Amino acid sequence: MDTTEQTKRVARAFFDACNSHDLDRIMDFFHQDLVHHARLSDYPKEGVAFVYDLTLKAFPDLRWNIVEMVAEGDRVCTLIHYEGTHRGDYLGLVDTGKQVSFYSINIARVRDGRFIEHRGVLDELHLLAQIGALPEPFLAQMS
Image 1 (cartoon, helix red, strand yellow):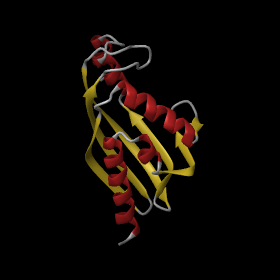
Image 2: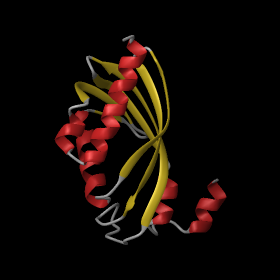
Image 3: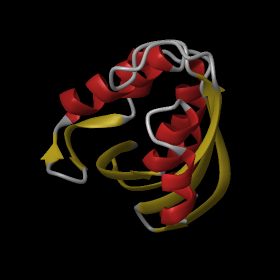
């Protein structure tokens, strides 16, 4: 199997792990030397664990659905469609019971069967509007 196919296999297995909601299993896909590129700063594996834990508690039935995946060598880009229910604290909003549906683009580089570098660009405005943190007209202005 060539490198590109191995990379895609790792990414698919990772999203399967996300759907298991088993934080330890999810975190096994991140290399110990991971660098996650975020909007404000880069952070290590421990920061990723914090974000996944917060997300799983806030959306305990969240589903990661692969829409499209493109890979070349050790790099993979995946469009994900999320679906779930807001059932816990998320940015100060608790259990609205609202259904959510939003997208993200995940770009990763794989080393030794794990993500060594990762970037997730989430449609946070759409998510926040759905749980009532932002007024819907604000979202319409941003589309």
